[in-house]
Each structure stands twice: as structure tokens, then as C-alpha cells.
Length: 371
Image (tube, rainbow, N blue to C red; front, side, top):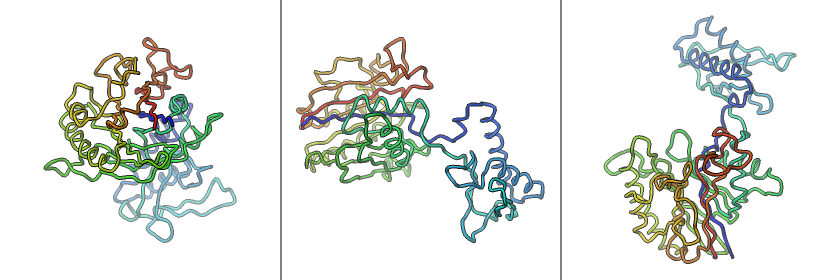
């Protein structure tokens, strides 16, 4: 059977605060300004009566008391349920939209909770274009890079991919939250069962308490017609501020993980955004283990890069690297670039009209294998 495997730095799979969907920039700025005001007030050691009055006004103005996803506002004050230490109590009135709010905490140390900007479901044009890229390549397995969390991946899968006419969501998806505090994680979508996952997020750098992996190096075991296929998903340290030393450490450890995986199965792939070019030491170290880069296959005829215009060698950041047994089964390699805004280089999808609406500044790399 032929199976298509892809890696894609999706870049846009985040549930953004509701306010970013506001048509009015003035309204968005007003909410942000009043959210910051509320946070500053809540952080006070002691609340004056004027503070309590203003906190009440802000809670009511933005329905910050309402946890119902169908009616809640752009701000929510998360506090302990039950009889725990609270910021406020709520008493319903005849008007369900105007409950009586009473501040009962005397200051920040007297209640447990926080204020947050409410996140909306996925719906931006850029996210829909991300889905268009994935539906166009129609891969059986997609390693996804820069996804906020598993719930976001699942919602994208069911609501956006599954909502595309004639398409179905992937029956299997998995993501383990990694080390990046911004919530850019590595996940996977699959039409074949994901039978096990191994995480390496707790591993440390040599001689340090700092995490080795900027995100994680999850090992996904996928059963393809009863044969285990291992995909080692990665998102190496960004090039911002250098980071070459850390990327080399990450590559050395990934090579060890790859070699251990080979003892379990001959079918192993190292994939993801490795944030370095073919001539870099981290990539050379991985290739020296016997891995083969997909874009070196005879069937590939495109430009060398996967980021931006893709015209330059140094724009090669995304990889599918195959173990020798799998390399013999590769039949075709392609890159889908039309989700990226680079109109002077290639024609994007008609729905990609600017950098704001592009699916990602990375192209999707995919390969067909006979397994």
C-alpha cells in the first residue's frame, strides 16, 4: 500500500483571545486596556472601597462572572468553586444579564484565582488556510509543529478539517505539552492507530538544569497494517539569538533516540522543524547516522528551502529523514508552498491574500512510501 507522510509547521494553531476577532480595533483596545486595569487592581495587597467598586464595574461590564461558553464575555475571573476563598460572590436577579456582584476578598492574598482573556474557537482565515494546505496534501500521517495544545489540535481536526466539504477528520491525534512557555508544541494527526507515545521533555542539557528540548522529542508509534512505524517529532531551538550549540546538543540526543528506535523497528522517521540548513553541524550529525533527507530523493525537483520563498539553501528548515529500510520505499517527495504568501515567487492559494492570511511561513513537506 502507498502511504503519505508529511511534516508541517502550522504556525497558526492557537486559540487566540476572543478580542482578536473583534472587527473594531477601538473595541479591542478598550477591552485590553480594561483587562490590564483589572489585573492591576486585583494584584493590590489591600482593596479599598473604590477598588472594590471599580472591580465590580469591570466584572459586570465584561461578563467576567460568566463561565458559559455560549454567553461569556471577553474576560473571565477564575476563582475557586464551592466554599473556597473567593474574590466575589454572585447573586442572580430577575435579569440574568445583571447579577448582583459583591467583592468579598480584602486583598490579593485573601482569594485564590486570576483574571484571563477568554479564548475563542479556531476561526481565523489563516487557520482555514492551514486546513486547506493539509487537505490539499491529503497525507495519511501529518506531524504538526507549533500547535498550542491537544485540545486545539483536536478542535482544528474536528471543526476545521472535519468541516471541509467532502473531508473527514483524522481518526487519531496526539500531542504532549512540551517545554515552551508560549505553547508551541509538536503533535500528530493520523489515519492509522497511534499505539504508544514516548516523551523526552524532562531531559536536561549537559551540566545544567535547563531542558534539553525546546519543545520535546515525542516518539509516536503508529501501526500501519500491523507494522510499527516510529516518528520522532521535533522542533529544534530557534535561530533567533543563535542557538546553534543547543541545536547540536538536541541533534546528538535525537540521534541516540533514533538509534534506540531502530532496535525496535526498521521503520523510523525523524521529522519536524529542525531550524537549521543541510550544511549545519546538527543536520550533518543526524544524516551521519544513516538517515536520508526526503528532499534529496531523485523524485524531488523543487526549490531547496521550506521556509519563506524557499529559494535559498538556508531556507531549508523542515525535514523528513528516513531510516535506510524506509528510504528504499520512498517513491515521491513534494512540497506544498501555496499556503505561504510569496506572490513574487509563486502563486499562493486564492484565499491567501497577505501575510496576515497565510497558513504559515513554512511549506508542508510530504513523501509517498510503498509499505
